[in-house]
Structure formats: structure tokens, C-alpha cells
Image (cartoon, rainbow, N blue to C red):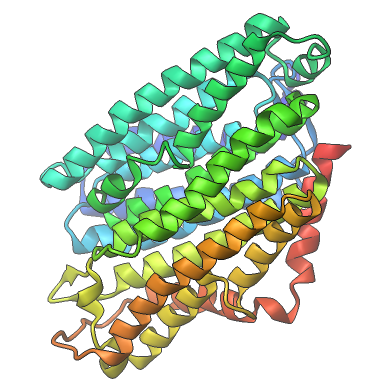
Amino acid sequence: MNFLLYAPILPEFILVVASMCLLIVGVFKKSEKTYSTISNLAILSLLLALFLIMTGNVPIGTSFSGSLITDHFSLYLKALILISSIIILVVSNIYLRNINLLKFEYIILILLSVIGMMIMVSSNDLISLYLAIELQSLPLYVLASIRNKSLKSTESGLKYFVLGALSSCILLYGLSLIYGYTGSIYYDEIASNLSEYDIGILIGIAFTLAGFAFKISAVPFHMWTPDVYEGSPTSVTAFFAVAPKIAALGLIVRILITAMPTLIEDWQPILIVLSIFSMLLGAFSAIGQQNLKRLLAYSSISHMGFALMGVINGSFEGVRSLSLYLLIYLVMSLALFICIIALKTNDEHIENINDISGLAKVNPVMAMIISIILFSLAGIPPLAGFFAKFYVLYAAVEAELYYLALFGVLSSVVSAFYYLRIVKVMYFEESAITFDPMSKRLKTLIYLLTAITLLFFVNPSIFINVAGSASASLFM
């Protein structure tokens, strides 16, 4: 066997071997010390996979008879997935210890889900696409309910599983229609067989996009998001908010740009509807929320509407804006979730907006950091979030979708209201809570991510060029 043929999937191979070995260790040797060892080794395996990608040691090419493709676009998304997963595991070590939930299965499930996400962004046929989605999704259902003594956590896991299974059925039906009418599972062959297509393909595309919409919690397939975000442990919620959505959006881009470029007039209206309703519902529904995690659930729905704007025109500019948006969204979302995890009183983690009343009086640095992140999420210049929204809006305007850009601006104005409400609570309300000292590790992560958010404007071309070179590989 020529192992060089499988070099393009070396990062995935490393994580598969690591997850299997760590699973065996965890089963036969259960203790708190073992959990720490497994966690550190998992982080090291993720760092090794990230190092190989960042240093260019993963060759461009295909594997498994063309079922998986490794190009600059997939490597870019894999790097984002790995970075978010490393941060989540570092944070989880502290958070799970605080809530007495040191289960080694948690780490294994994250590794398996990450493997599925990495295969998703490299999938080059319909079968690998579906298998990767299931490999990503099944561990997430368990992670949502891993706090099995909590009624909310168990309920969130059950809701996520039931609705996730339904979305998988819808997706599989759509994929089967595409295969049935084109006679191929490979993206390039599907694209070449679309010269003469039947109405059945359009139905297949509609069902497929509905399945994808569930994965990114786009309206009207968002119903699981607030309950699952609220019920899951906060570290799991942070993972849900970032990594799976990066993978799903990357998969949407690849299948639409690679397999269906000639049908843009058919799938574009579907994405426009998903984008507009996601932005508006996410913005307006968040206004009345008191639970921070539910508010961030609706915020993420709105942000996914913005992200879809980068896919809609099917051009290089659009995909580049999406790639940049995902990078900035990762930084902002993780920074805010880590702040929520870091703030606790009497060993109890905060969850409601009122819990941070008067934070500016007892911890002005943390109040300022949270304000910076919230302003960035709202798209206030010159913070990183402004650049993210500017480039997706520019892509919409370039495609002459002026009304879409108008809805984007409107939803940004509305979202600014509920972000400012949190700032108002921190600065202008009295505090009745004394917060516990923060972990140095969490502080370091918060400062690093906030610095990126705050100083992004100094030299944004670095990130824009990286996003552009990654996106260009889809149009070669």
C-alpha cells in the first residue's frame, strides 16, 4: 500500500489514532489524574494536526479515489476548526472541574466530532458528505446531555437528537434525489451532468439546503438552538456556537460552488430567504432574552444569516468575505463565552444578564473587555466585527442584491440594541454580587482574543489575504 496517497488526510489520521488510543486509556484507567492526562494528550494531538496544516506539511490532493479533497480552502477551515477545538478543551479543563463533570468521554466525543468536521470540509462526493455529517453530529447529541443529572441538559440533548435525526433524513432524501437525477455522487461529475436537469434536482437541492440550514441553525430550522444552548454545559455551548457552523458553512460553499455552479439562479433565492429571516428573527428575538446563553443563541442565528450573504452570489469575493467572517466570528464568540465561563460567584457560574449588574464597579477591566466584544459583535468600527460585516455586505452589493444588504444593516441596528442593553446593565446598575477570582489561563485567553478583536484594524490585510488565497482554490 502506498501511504503517500493518504498524506492529504494526515491531520485526520492523527486525530483518529489519538481518539482510539485515548478511549482505551480512559476505559481501563479512570481517575481525575487520567482525565488531565487524556485532555493534555488530546490538546497535543490537535496542536500537532494544526502545526502540520500551518507549516504547509499537508500536501494538496485527493484521497480514497477522489472522495476527499485537500485544497487551500479545506485546510483554512480545518485550521479554524482545530483552533476553536483547542481553545474549547483548554477552557473545558477549568470549567468541568468547577462543575464536577470530569468525564474523559467528553474529550473523546469532541475529538470524534472534530474528525467529522474536518472530513466535511474535505468531502468531494455525496457519501463522504453524509458520513462526515453523521460523524460530526452523533457526538454532539451526547455532549449536549453529558450533564445527565441536569434536567435541562438531558432535555436539550433529547431535543437536539430528535430534530437532528429529522434533519438528517431530509438531507439524505435531498442527496438521493441529486444522485438519482445526475447519476453520480462526485461533485465534478454532478456539475457536468447538470446541463439537462429535471425538476427533481431542484427539489433535491431544496431538501439538501434544508438539511444544511438545520446544521447552522438558520431560520426556519433554528428551533433547537435556544433550548440546546441554554441546557448544555457552557463549554459545550461555546463549541456548538463555533466549530460545527464553520464546518457546515464550508460544506455548503463546496457543494454549491463545485457541484452546482450552473444552478445559481435556482439555489440563490433559497439562500436569500434563509439569510434575511435568520438575520431578522435572530435580531428581534434576542431583545427579550434574560438568559445570556439564549441571547447568544439568537445572536448566532443572526450571524449565520450574515455569513450566508457570502455564499449567495457564488463568486470569489463572496467566498472570501465568508472565510474572513468565520475567522472573526470564531474570535468574537469564543472570547464572549470564555468571559461568561470566567465569571462566577460562590463557585456558581453566571447565566443571566442581571448576574453581571454593576460589573464595571467590581471588575472594570472585565466589563471593558465584554463591552469591546459586544460592540464588535454589533459591527461597530473599528473593531473586527465591523470588517466581517462590511465585507459580506460588500459582496451582497457587488451581486446587486441591495435589498439583502439593507436587511443586513437593519438587523445590525436592532442587534446593537440588545448588545448595548448588556453594557448598560454592567455600567449603570448596582451590583449585589462579588465575583470569584479568575483562572490565569482563562484571563490569558480572554486578553489574547480581545486583543485580536480590538487591534484587527491595524493590519487587516494579513487576514484578508489569507482568506482570499484559501477561497481562490475553489475557483481554479
